Image (tube, rainbow, N blue to C red; front, side, top):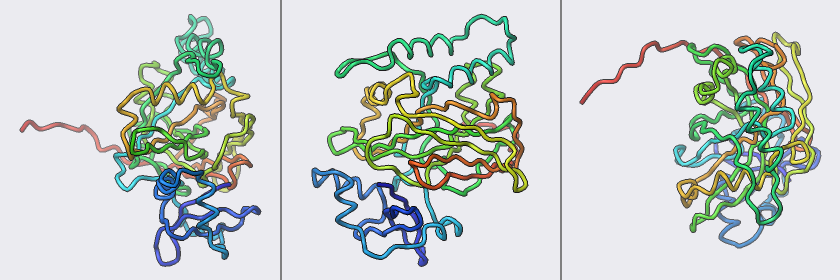
Length: 332
């Protein structure tokens, strides 16, 4: 089951259940957002899928047309953007360490000592998938921003003028809601483009937080239920109507050094991340990136991330935003 959020022809918000052929979406009655839908499911003590089936209308809308007209929204948002926390983790995939190490050797040479990134990746390989009821190795973690940094499919990704570069990070994202008692519930999963400045990150890994350019994109669809063990997708970069770079990527726990449950534990163990009514989007890490393959992006490039299990592709074009210059603070 896959869901979308969109605006109808009158500009009103709707939630749609994507039809099996992927070309249409059945609107849901009684809810206007996935946030409302998740709250209803919690209140009813049942599954999200049951709520969707009970609310789905018979008629469907043209999903492709919604995308073409820019009416598809990110698959999850909060009425108060500051209560939608965007975070993530890295070095969680078998291929991610290789990509990170290429960044390290490109900057510091092939004879550079083993990086902390490789050390933490090895910790994940050895202890990132503990048995049931056990706590495993702690993953890398970062804070991206809040809901205002999440862009809809098709919206331009802003490349700040101060950035040294900007490029895609194709990832699977876990989407969560906290109930009235502060208990986390996973709503589902979505494709995500975490979008980072890898040139800045490669200079020094203590710059990792600065490399997170805050903007990111989710969707277009939300996958309800469990994530398959093996997820296969493809990333493409389009320039002037042509594909100039592409690569397959693997995700799902079969291709990860951490279990999703282990990542979720280390995120939600902090009580501040269990505030009732909040939403969370948690990026699970990227296995391949164009930067680590030596490809240089340009403003105007369009990133496309797709995986059949998630339906239609996530596409966003990178757009240069002028640097505002020095930001000074005034004393009161």
